[in-house]
Amino acid sequence: MGAVKSHPGLDEPDKLATRYGGVPVVYVESEEDNYVYGECWFKDRLSKLEFKAAAVKCATDGCDAVLNAVNMERQAGNPAWGIVDRDIVMSKELWELVYETNDDTFERAKPFGNEIKVLCRWEMESYLADGEALEHIQAGLNKKPERPLPDVFQELLDHCFVLIPHAAINAVLQLHKRNGVGDGYTNSFSTDEEVSEYFQKTQIPILPGSGQADYDHHLPLVTAFDSPRASAEERLIALLRRVHGKALLERFFHVSHKIQTDVKGLLANRIKEKSRIPAEIEAFVDKVAYSH
Image 1 (spheres, rainbow, N blue to C red):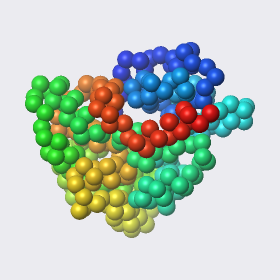
Image 2: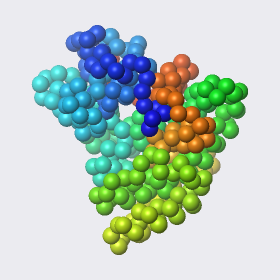
Image 3: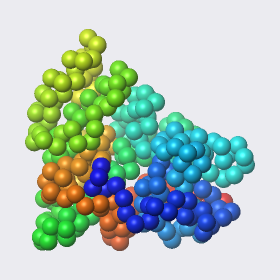
Image 4: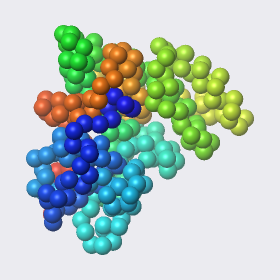
């Protein structure tokens, strides 16, 4: 997604490694993730650990690169850990974990070992979809007053509903070994019904005969992450475990607020400034930082 792609600091690969040595390494999926974790959220822990993009070790990005980098370091006797997006469980077709709605159960599973933290939300960008930070950034860029947070969370929740069919069709495409649809695919649609109808006209017909049944199976499994009796903020967080975070940011910035500016670093820094770093990630980082 262009609007959240880069920020100053991302063009200095392995910068942290030149500043610190002899501490545990936490491998992450990309230089962008490295920037968010190492330069924005946990800069104050960098005497205790360092973050590295997996490409530094493996020459490629992504979840598999993180697994490989940690494995190579551990085999060499070096303390190493990894953070990967939840979407890895779909790429590995661990379907029970894809649709596990309980965070404690999901965290206990540890499908890739104790050294690999699998995020509870779908991808790292899902944590940047923080209502307070999003509204602060968009209001500043559009030179408008910030709206009440309940209104912001409701807007984000409405976008999540539109993205439920997007998550479902990507699961079906994975099941049939097809390339998934991109993050901007829903940008021209206003409702989940429109998105679902579009996918059933354009994607289901190119799949084997079970395609429609598979879609009908996966759609309610995505919907099951919603908690209808909870607040809009709580429902948003619940759905971000399965709805694609990058796609949500696409809709919020590109569709609703007509912003194309790079904002990933701005969001991460605002989240840090307001002490809104997700406890789940902070707990893992502290475990690594203070366990040696």
